Image (cartoon, rainbow, N blue to C red; front, top):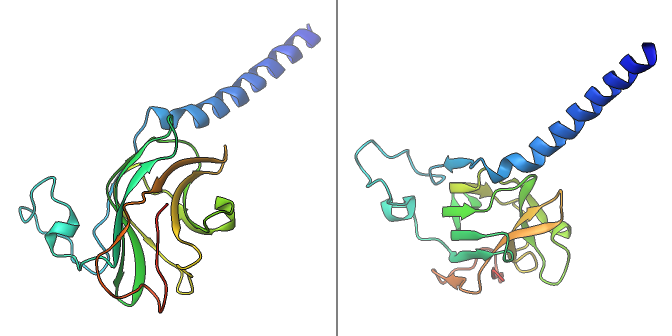
Length: 185
């Protein structure tokens, strides 16, 4: 009787571990994380001031220094929306607007060097949500000349979920840092 109950207990433990891992890996496919951060440096809009689908860009935020759109990482990992680089309160930020991406486990935002591995780039932190408006503060010493690709990266599986597009364009004539340019590839 003792051997059978030991096998039963081991089976339950294995089942719980496998179930927990499966839930962690599978739940992002069924649950959207929606965020709606105000642009840094702006007061929260008062109720009724904006139309429901109007973005913060259209509500008086400074023109971005650069702006572009997201594109899919591959045929299974999708991303869309706008990405902008702008300054507020003497800091530089990446802002995602009307952003939507395939959800997944362990997603991070990176500024990567073209031609090198994503994880060799600057980790801006965990993706706050797979949908909605969100901001990522850049380190003060971020070299945007060399770290010029914005990437949504799944660390658990080493997969790109989305990147900025080749439609990146200059909105203002000033560079983010002297002599630097940011390209989304």
